[in-house]
Length: 136
Image (tube, rainbow, N blue to C red; front, top):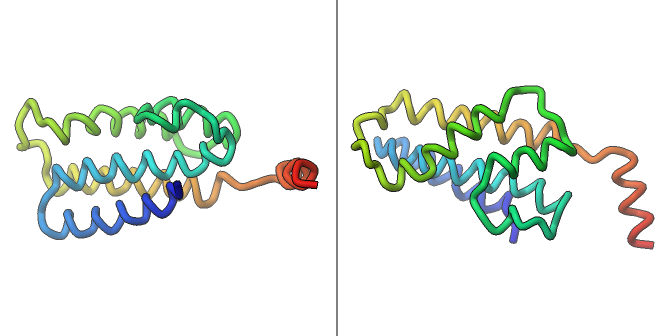
């Protein structure tokens, strides 16, 4: 499964939903995009991880950060997203909290995580040497 492609689809859905004023759905799709982005790297560093089968994005982030430390505090971002992953699907407290500003906050979280995946989770020379050694 190509998690990065799935994340790209989520990014398109986010723009469509946000443009339509569907902010609760935007928040949920942001949470999904973050999960897919994190799984992009987890599947590379731990392809048999049980975390790939669930939605535990806090521990997925921790597993990825063990290998690729981040320059931003993404744990608090991911915890917040984890809370709203279910809340946005099943809004027990109603939908009034899902404003444009609230949705924009989640869009920024996606941007932060995408930046981390795209720019901070880079293979090192040792990674490449190890990969080359394993394939030959």
